Image 1 (spheres, helix red, strand yellow):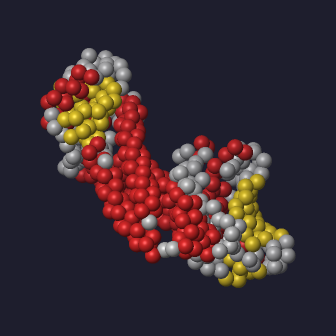
Image 2 (image 1 turned 180 degrees about the horizontal axis):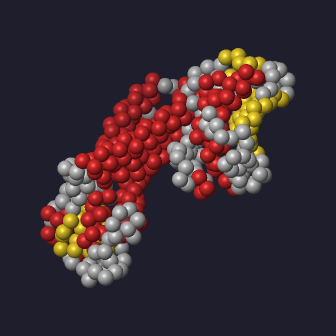
Image 3 (image 1 turned 60 degrees about the vertical axis):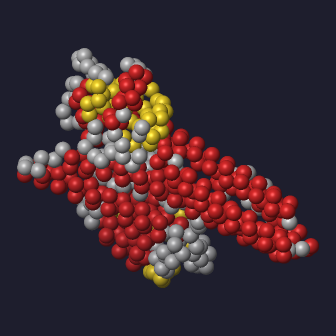
Length: 469
């Protein structure tokens, strides 16, 4: 029992320390990435692309930067002109760099007129990780510095709290192992030890990529298979959450920044400006609302009861969808070519997916070219497939882009300026997969595109545990 407790305690300690160091290093890497990400943002601002008026001085560049770049929760920024603190954002900062004269002097001393400088300093404000970005404007003799700093203590607080929680759990687990070890004996202990050793051999359990080897057909083997299945689900769920949070954060950052920037510069006494800002804010909020609705639909498509099947007459259903699609562009010629027979589908979601394909055809095909709405049945009545297609006469899609267009927030270069969230084809694909089918793109480049929703007539598979979109 002593040997078991010693080995278990060593393993828990090693994994805890390793996990803490990995998370700590991850925080440092994330802070550096955020600091260095400020450099291209500041270059964009200095180029004048984000401002309606020319930026002809160092002071004007720093002022626009203070208005448009929103500091993170543990971040503070400060603008220097000719080596002196001059500008701070009009937001609540967690700490003020200019309050520490020694730190200000160090920044001025370390600044390079041509290169970005990144460093770490212990000051009265705490341990700070900072970046110093030189700012120069042609024709302006003044020199400027844009300084951003993160409080590493605050950034590492969650890691320390996580390690403390792990320590308490590890101690409780060690006590439980001692209790079980004192009661276990002989044959009961041997298979449990084997399972523990197999699970402990995982060198990267934090990423949920390792699996327990399954040998035999006894209870322990069944337990190992169950654990592997659980890790499969946890890994898929973790990957889905990370991708979703990353994509949503990226897509929502722009409208939030736009609204905040206009509100900060708003002249409340100017009625015309208030109305214009109000209209812009409503438009951006509507865009965010559409984005959230589309993402919610993608997430819901993975639920077991997302699809509600009912028997549908294919010919009547095709005609009805064709009638709805023709309203998208009444100036075009719409050809409806229905098949006959019955299908077991969710008519509401399939209609949504089919009309999404028709809407894409209207947006991206050559104006005036006819669009065909067709349905076709292949195979037998018990194992056949239903093909629901939209065919247009547009420029087509290059072969290298055909897989990418079904990814979340993916837009082709030719679609710039076209309204949409970039989730349309992802939603179509998710609805098709929820029916046990898929979406197929065919047609040679330059001769139009045909998007086909291919789903089984009767046997509908359950949605797979894959990443949303």
